[in-house]
Length: 128
Image (cartoon, rainbow, N blue to C red; front, top):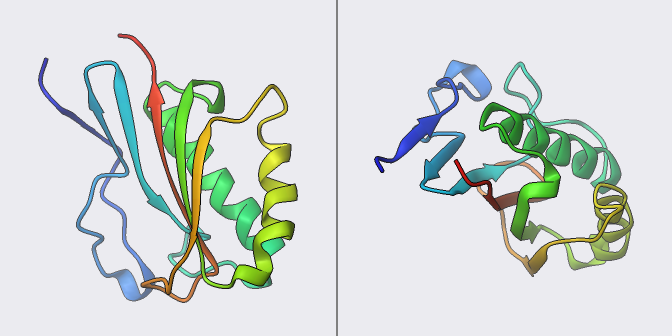
């Protein structure tokens, strides 16, 4: 089965092209590229970790939908936080997106490439 690239070409701040696919399907697996709290206009959601976690998770949900998936299909999540002090607040909001049980997850502190407090990528499993 060939690899399927999912999602339209997006642009970031200043209209710069973002050189990656929002999602890629490889057989029954769907890989969602790292999502940050980017609004439709390419700017990062203002505010702290609460607003950015919600926007980031909503962006993950939107890309999953383009691939025909939901959060129920997510098997693994990777999270990068800019500040470890945000962990507990992030965790509370994150948990609200998985009321039926959370997938496997790794969370690390890392300086992010854009002016964001959080980045999340996921791997979903949805048989074709």
